[in-house]
Length: 207
Image (cartoon, rainbow, N blue to C red; front, side, top):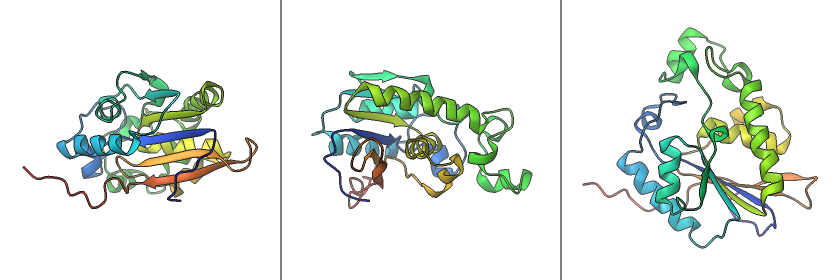
């Protein structure tokens, strides 16, 4: 899934740039971490990728890792902050790495189990469905800046799949994905997923 479609209805999904915890593998839900310098560089390259695309609406999570990515990509002045776009609330698992969580709960699966003292899948789905309801009536081309697990949930809800399918959709930092349709709106589709070619062959300048 590497080519950008010319479909009349598209939803662009941008995952935020690198943070200290995305680099270390720690689960970052509501902890409001800044981007690393590499994350800021990634955001600017993402902006170069999107520069020639016109969007009818731009929405971002209010958490700074997404909002800063949005700003550095060049969309700060037109973006609307929506709390429904915040990352999954990891509750008791906030800041933990996957192996630490599995030591506590060996069968844990976020898309099935949610997080203790955080969000259940049903609660996260409600947020995703509110966003999708807005998208389907808002515009022809939209751009969203958010975080990994929530964007994966958004994609599976777009497709009408069970939430557990989110485990099969991986997202790198500063990646770009596009949701759309095949022939008409009865056939939701993924046009592009986890595309990072705007970062490839562009080594991060070390200072």
